[in-house]
Amino acid sequence: MRKSNELRTIKILRNFTKHAAGSVLIKWGDTWVLCTASVEEKVPPFLRDSGRGWITAEYSMLPSSTGGGRKDRDIKKLKMDARSSEIQRLIGRALRAAVDMEKLGERQITVDCDVLQADGGTRCASITGGMIALEIAVEKLIKSGLLKENPIIHRVAAVSVGVCDGKPTLDLDYIHDSTAEVDLNVIMTDDGRFVELQGCAEHKPFSDKHLEAMLKLAKSGLKKIFAITAKNA
Image (cartoon, rainbow, N blue to C red; front, top):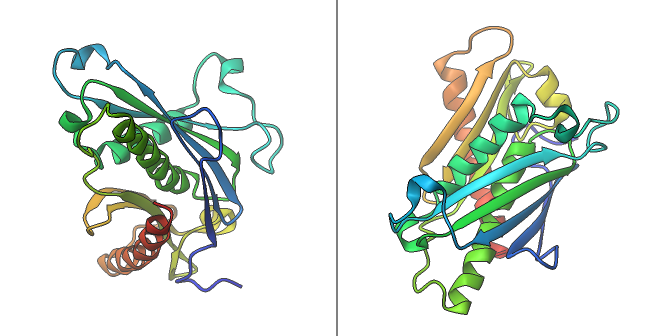
């Protein structure tokens, strides 16, 4: 039985696919996400001739990634579901916080996060794994001479925290997430600054005391996560 202040086991497999500029399979407990980074020597129209680059993300769940029966692919509905759209925007915002766009130059890096197996925390695993895939892609750009200077100014990572049975709890799996009184995703830089806080009370409002306890727990968990990602740099 995992303690309320313990992370699930995190394993990171670098260069998991052959053709992507950067790829990582991140196994976060029973949540597995394949993160791949692709480089294009162009930027969206609003950045043309600006000298600045762009980081964006796409997110999807495979049809058999959950235990609730087959999930239809978005293409079948001819539109992305609202949850996937919201999560991929979150991943993009988080990863852009890690990069100096002027140093990146006029190129775009797209990080695709495909959930192979879901047991809670897919967005946190996507951000954390996506960061490593992004770093691998940038390393290759530097080695090839296309980049003179590393545009990554710090790492980002994410973890979920919540209140379960009145107790602050770290790293919510599906069982915790589906019954939590409060659910909060915390994205931070490796120098201890917040990128985004995303959360809500599921049943009744929560207090400052609970928020402070969750943030303290998230910071302690993220410190461990950054130690894990540093070993895989």
